[in-house]
Length: 190
Image (cartoon, rainbow, N blue to C red; front, side, top):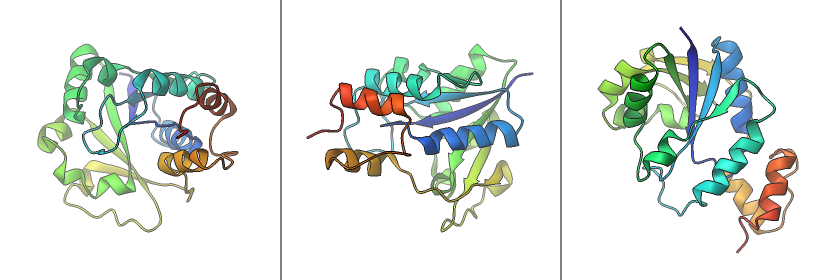
């Protein structure tokens, strides 16, 4: 049975923190692959996101050197808001022989009990959670989450967008191909 880690996100833009989390989960949880799942319209975001074709291309550029990383367009192709439970239902139907592990950060672990149809979701997947300093991950579902300690690396897509908007360097935050793509397509400029 293949063990697949799922890393969902807006990836606006995908940064080195996403890649570090994916690699840590791959190695520490003995996964066969990590599938990056860019969302079409994330249900928890209130801001406008960059067009999906740009985000897809940036994810492709970010992951193409790692043969264990793939992109899945399941949420993009579904269009509209995507809830994790809908994605997992569809994946389990398409790949019944695979075991899926949904990767989440410390900030999301606290909200896990409030996720849409969480009881069903817990039947469809196991969770891999990354601890970060400053976040307390105690919650009623903590037995469902395999916790991994992650070195503190403060990288966020919103900070990167802000840095780019103000013409500040993103060196060591984005890989070169993603940085070049952003520049060539004039993304995150006002």
